[in-house]
Length: 460
Image (cartoon, rainbow, N blue to C red; front, top):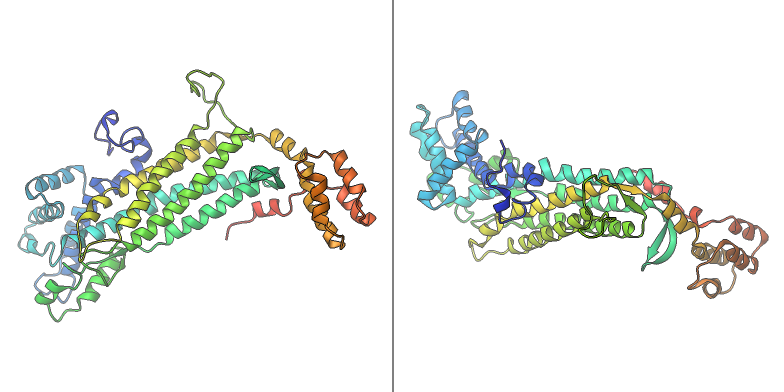
């Protein structure tokens, strides 16, 4: 089923307009439809769970067929069902109450269960349904869409790192020539950074609560004072695949969301740093971009192939992080036992994740068009003999020579050396003959240390 329901030309948000096809995979999870579906699933699973709870004898244990009937209301929820929920909401003006009425209406269609419909939403506040629904939304969107795309970005960059592990490249610190590295090693640095943030994002615990109006099981205890409701609730949350938060107000306080969003922000910021670096390397001809037939780079300059994918990624990462950072700071703040300002902010989770997904796909698209310009990279490093001042002054230190740094600084600072001038500088040094001989064999493109092996090393 396609979830595109309007002409993209008339969408207010770029996520649901221009970029709709790029975020379609997220729609079943983070759309209004997805939120309603998760709410219905929670209501149905709570009903089924209570029927299995020995502390609630008034609700008879369901037969296998009846249990499957109830759970199917949520598991087989579709767009037509969502429209029915919205019809209830048009009357109730309350989105969660509309879900409750929808589930009751479906259960009434089962003759055996019709008399038990008031156990739907038993002892629940709306936030019991909402926070678990959002928890399921974030969990499944993370596992099914965001993490696989993150992994594609990391593995694609690492593929290039492996292929270019030995390709010597001139470093630039402060924009100036610096000790050589390899292209593969610099790309591996990015993989390591992204992987660390990816793992922190993946490892963030998703919390939930199911403890009533202000987090104390007040209604539960009034109906069944001898039942161990904290344990009953925690087991239900575990069945949902979430982690119980025993201490809450009316709302689960969203601290875990802030942790999750901050981890996502850090991944995005590392990727943004990568996008800008690749943009710069394209500008200095370290990479070329494959032509796409029919594509136009400039409306007036026919020769251009612009690095638009990396620019697109950079821009969308910025928008994503603006949303994520606002949500992370806002959602952890709620007046007294609750206010409703979190509700409208939570509805932007889909937009934030959508901008992330658009950016990741743009980076992948940009990478797919890159070609390493080995000739330019090699020429750049092989003609920068001044970078060998570092190993020379280091060897001078080894032999106890006075002011080695200062001597090399005087001879090389601000100059671009060639091989002849480098050899001339070496000849004037009072180093042992063996040391001079070894240093004379150095070339900028071979002065890369452990770069190649670091590029090939598997991430821990």
